[in-house]
Each structure stands twice: as structure tokens, then as C-alpha cells.
Length: 503
Image (cartoon, rainbow, N blue to C red):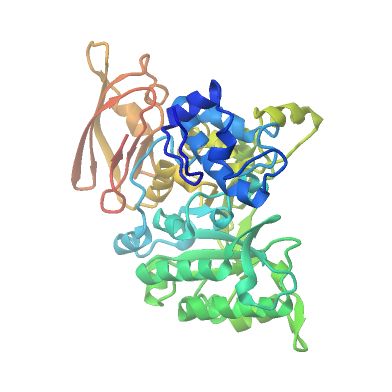
């Protein structure tokens, strides 16, 4: 098959590219796909790289069409192949797709339960929320990317805690426009754009409440003038809708404050700062944390929230460590509680080198998140411990677990779910089996039913069949007939608060 003569246009079908590359590529392959006038020793890097990006994109499409996602992930994780860890093939398809629009869940919840306390809510949060603005073709981008969605999209999907890392994009600059989203050595978009996006979301959804934490990344120092401008920018962007120092000293007590009070006071954003951004002098004045709080209404994170970085890439360790953290601090109701279900990439010891070289182990947060989001791991863990006093649940790549996010939000419903009758029938035939008691035992917080694995959850000796359910949310009757198999998951929550989803 002829390759296109225009080097800027690739029109081949993915299969055609795979076929040509794996059999006998023509001698002019590089000339047509990469360089207009290619000859050995004359390749120009700035000309070559943009075309190389196109090749990567098409190879990704080709591989996705013929190879399982896990296999492609191994290739892209392998340091022997992707030694610079470019952000190629960052998966964005959830294992279980479902409706993901949750832009006004706090508003709806307040309408039916205005006395619901902020500290008692289960709140989805995102780790390194603005890291999506980092270019995928930056060196080691795959190690720093923690989200596929923009900050606005995360908020629309239900996240109400944002973890924002900032630093200087230009050394010794005094301009606030040079304050960027950063993650380690990686630089992303402008911080001012993140603030504008959050502000626009809150203007469109004034009944929602967002906790935004701003952290100055290590070794990405801002000048004193930039820091002052950052504080002024935050304060001017959110204005009177921020929780002020006076609010914090009077009515805004995290142990007692309710959704109804927040709406009554027209407050919908709490800005937290890591103390690393304070403690500097500007125009003969010292700006410690107390001064910044008093003048700009940005609060010290440790005064309002407890959290723990678990620093592990072992999924079972992250679960047990979060369980210990929750048991230790769940009764401390005067602060928000941030449970970080975030895996931390690390080289580890010499024994990990072969695995990292050949992709059996990965430094990519997306690879670690996909392993954590398997239904027998995090979904089952949180479902089985749903009655615990979770507050903020911090996640990477929230687009990969939309059903889990909806489950977390659904835990806040005040309406009681009653299971009247439940039966299952094998696809191979036979009589129906009553499983009402088993299903009743799986209802969490008396308001939500989440079946992660029909066979294991209901203790069946078959993995494919028909599930019939009769239930009600107080006065509303619900009837479902589900054909299930080993991959089916089923989430049932209050329709007036969250949409019913059946998978």
C-alpha cells in the first residue's frame, strides 16, 4: 500500500500501519512519515519530534485495536522501551462505564437534608487535580500525570476537594502569570486558569461547596512578590464566598457546620494553604500563616484537615494504612479527614529493576490506579467498610472509576432503602433462588446497594443468570430485572439524590 506523500498527513487505517511496520516497511518510510527531506545525519530534532508524536498516536490506536489494554500498559511502562516515560497511552476508559454527571449533588442533598454536617459527608477528592495540564510529551510526564480530566470536569463529576500544586514557571519572575501548576520537575498550565475554572463552576453551581488546597511544590520556589500576588488573586477571585477568618472564629465550626448554614451564609469555598508558601518578608512585613489568614482568608491546612501520605505502591498496604488512619482519627470531628487512596511510584530496591525495565512494574500513576481500581480491591474494600466514617476520599484518575465515585456520593443519602424481595436464576435454567436476606445484608448505611460481584456477593455457584429485585426508597417502589455475568456490577441509590445506575 502506498504511503501518503504529504508528510503532515497520515491517512492509513490502524491495521494497515501495523501490517506495514511488522512486515517490510519501505525504505522511504521515515521520509514520508517524519521528515520532508530525510537522509542519514541530516535529521532535525525540532522537525522530527512533532511528526514522531503523530506516529505514537497512530501506533497507540493500532495497538489498542489488536492488543488488550494491560499489554499496551506494560509496553508503555517499560523503561527499556519508553525510557523517558512520555505520557503515551494514558488510559481514559473506565472498566465499568456509567453516567458520570454529578455537578449539583450537594445542592440536591441540601434540599432534602439541610442539617447534614459537612464533616459527616463522604466527599470525593482528586489528587494533583490540575496535573492534566502537563504536556504528555514532557520528559517523565507519565510519572507526573495523575488526572485525565480538567478541573472543571472533575467538579462536574462530583469531586469537591481539589489538591493543587503550584510553583514558578520562570525563575526569579515577579509575575503572577508565571505561577504554574507543577508536579515535581514537571510544569503545567497557569494557576490563574485553574482559579478561573473553579470560580466559574461555583458561579454556575452556587449550592456546591469546594475545599481547595494550594501547595507550593518543593524546589519550585516563588518570589515574595509572586506569593503576595497569588494570595491577592485567590482572594479577589472568590471574594465574599470564601470562608473568612471571622467565619472560622465564629460560626464555621467543622464539627457542627451544615449544608444549610453554608447556603444561608452564601459561602461555597474553603481555601487551605500548606505552610511552606508562607513565612517570608515583603516590603518590611513578615507574612506568616496567621497574617496570610487574616488578610487573605486562606487557612492553614493542618488547622482544618487531617491527612496522611502513605507513600506506597502496594495496593493492600494502601488499604490497610487508610483503615488504620481512619480508626485513629474518625472521632476527631473538628477537622476534615482526608483518606488518600493514592499510590506513590518508586524505584524501590535493586530487585525491582528488571520489572521496571520490562514493564512488569510501573512508575506511571495511571498503571497503579488501574490495579487499585479493580473491583476486588478498592471497590470491595470501600463497599464492605461503607459504614465507617469516611470523609474526603482522595483518588487519582477519577474518570477510571465513575461508578465508585457515584457510590461514594450516594452514601450521603438520607432516604432509607428497603429490600422487599430478591431472587436469582441461573442462565443454565432451573428454579429461582431467594436471596433476599443476602441482599438486605449488603445494603450500606440503610440507603445504598452496591453489588460488585454477583457470584461472590450473593454466594452463588454460578456466575451468569437473572437477578430480580423489589425494593423501595421510603414511599417509592423500585423493580429491577438484571441479566448478569461475572463482569456485571449493580448500583442502586436514591433517585431524588442520585440517578439509578444498572450495569
